[in-house]
Image (cartoon, rainbow, N blue to C red; front, side, top):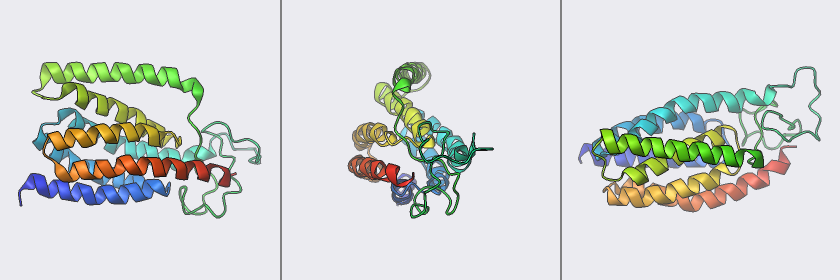
Length: 225
């Protein structure tokens, strides 16, 4: 078995574990978010997907940020406050003192200050869209001028949207699933084209599962309060 195929299968296996942890909204998904990109770095480089290779490095760094946010951001602004049940608007407000019965699905068990799942704020739609467009254009320009990428537009698109989606996941916005749905569908077709069948298969699975995960997270929101 060649190295590319072995890495493809290994990444597929870790990806399944990651998906389960994300579905459960478990903080341990960030550990898988370090292991999986480490595998993908080699896989993408060998397949000539240079933007995805760079994205894998970003994933490793962002995993540390995501773990810290999920674990500690729910505590911000709580000193001297009693955690009023009716206050649950912003991502920095926990409002989840009644989170018993959900401790196994949202951060460390028994951690009342863990970041709660919230909806994506409408006020952020326009600025996030602008950032996405700029990042997409920038990555496309780099791929076009400094690499031999045969799919610069698609590779840049999935990379830029993944950056936004990973940030939304770190903030624990339920709509991060919808962003990943688009990324996964496009990546599935791209990896088929690049001859990475196992990677294409898991992204096809991700595409379907994104709908299930989104509905799951929406149901979890009221149970936190």
